[in-house]
Figure (cartoon, rainbow, N blue to C red):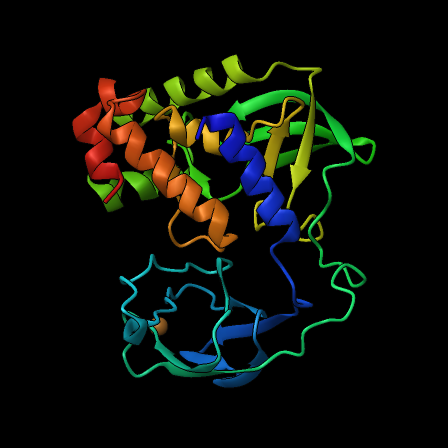
Length: 281
Ligand SMILES: [Cu+2]
């Protein structure tokens, strides 16, 4: 299947894939506890865990599902997971095995009119004007009369400026900051080549929630139907953020795109292959 068709297909699945009324539930993480520690939700519901500690990091690890240990959630970070299967799902914090929680997932009644109750997923009807490309995974758009930063959801491009995320990436992945900056610069250049200021773009995602940096996380789609999130990964300038809560279809597509980019030495996988290996681990 060509790239275009697969993008369109993903969008179609994204729009039609949810047959259940999806509800979001919040679980807080504070004082080394998940609150509530036990929760009952319906099939198809999503839970968001937010780290409300002042300085302690934690993780949300469904170890028994065979998931790999996820990245740590630093204060203000969140993790989301959608539960499509019925059952009991225990989880724990990676660094603190005594911190545990349990999710009961019960059967959802299928809706009679699936489209009546829309989730927060936006349609792609409204277009926005691109103001600038900030870096390899961040854009600034004109949104409700103001400039708004948009984060390409589910992907991560290397930083191209000195900032706390650069320091974090550098120490966690043992990659020299200058190397990361160089890769970040190339990623930004690539995104700048893909979209130009004044171009109209569309957003897909839950536009009611901004991240802790005030950015709007979304899938950004060009007029021709191409998703920039996927394109950046497919071209080898960004990685799939595995811990990020994403529609399964998009996640599978991104995973596939990344595998392809790696195998075919696209973008940074070609120019900085060893560093990309390190960074992707
Ligand atoms: Cu913990």
